[in-house]
Length: 312
View 1: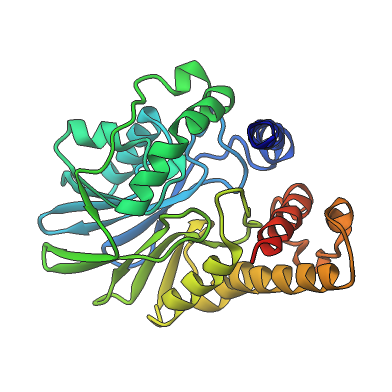
View 2: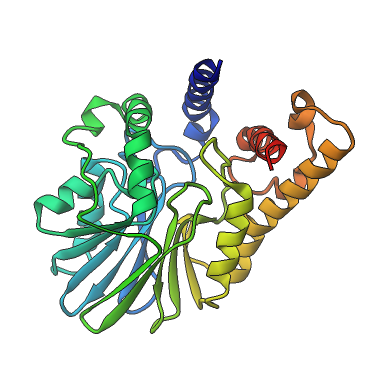
């Protein structure tokens, strides 16, 4: 029974990915957003992974230091990593010295191989690497369907050289980078990258801006709220999200935390009133209808939170 459920979930997710989200901003390529003098976001489209964006439908980012570049999230494929490298070249000729994987989603790590070939160190949390290993087969299956054989050419599973359990830090070119495991949230190994001297946080999949977040089988909605609060306690001046443009903490809270809190409260009230999972998709979530992907994700999110809360 459990294996049938997993298979159905994967098929359902693939069907979701192959439909409406594909049409929202499918041919928009990632773009550069200068956040600070030496800090940049690489803002992907709010739609889905496609052959055009090479799996890069998320927000990555990089920091230019005197000793080289630190890249946060290398994209969803070998060729996607090449595209990110081309954007970095628009800013600096310095090499990418360090790549940080902020989590286990495909676009957080499957571009590792490109930068590893060019001498970069790769760092990720232990939980993120475990998640990457666990879901690699499913991720490649989806990417083969969404991005295609040509777009996925050269992509191989290259895991981090260095891992950390809860926290690590390093300096490069006089800039301090603090890496903190924040998950489980969207994925079990979600981590944030904090630049204390700049007041900037790379939040990875802890934060979705202008796009409805997805609560998936491997997500924890309760853990996600706690992770967001831990990030907010840093009082960042700028939040670089995992999806959407760089923003402030207030908008990050409206588009991510407020939705998660609403969803858990609404689902909890629905369950307390005796509602069943067959009807949870009709839950009124219209307060968040302005977020991209709303119509496609709202029902699935409610169902997943219902299943999660049944076991709490």
